[in-house]
Image (cartoon, rainbow, N blue to C red; front, side, top):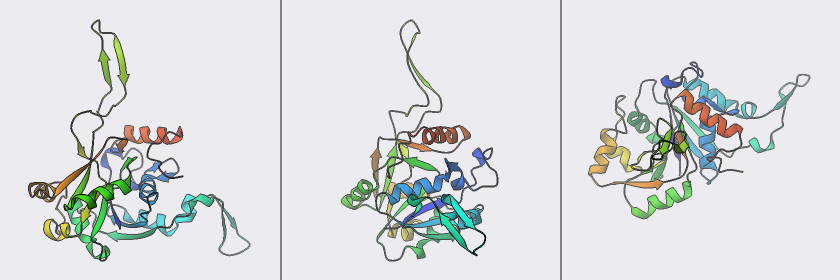
Length: 262
């Protein structure tokens, strides 16, 4: 089963990190967040990816065209043309990556429709965003999708609160303090979707202004063909500079919950 990743965003709210870089290429540690997302899928045996490119898509193409140089420490022997020694043995990836220019200004629904021809004959495909991480069990997600027989499975997560949360005693003494906790009630679309191929034919078009999260998924829900796979573990988008700092701190501390690979 192939995984489609939406990689066309500009990341306007996180431009202070690097305004010349597409959002999926913003680094967590040494590697772009896109690499981390792909590692989550790869750890569960899903190694075929279709990347929907948009804003500065050439940067993403260059990353994969020079993949081992980008992710490894290397030695270049200038006395021998093209002699390069790669030092990181764990950098090898059994990935097949299709990079598709889906338009700079195309919205999410149009992007998915424009990669349909690259899905082959697979009945189902996975879809996620190029800016969110989770400790999700992809195998369990796929198994759940196949069990209910509906058209779309969306991963429902508890959104993280925007501010710290304090629990107060009667005398206003702080009993507990949590920085940006996850909201305990209600769920939102956390990405990590599984879709039947026919969803594209029935609900999508290549129109550039078609937003997947509006009419298409809304109508799918009204048709009772949309099911939530509830995920109560770690989930964190990277929409702001503060969230970029949170993810990088977790990675630097060796406490990254989304690192489900060895």
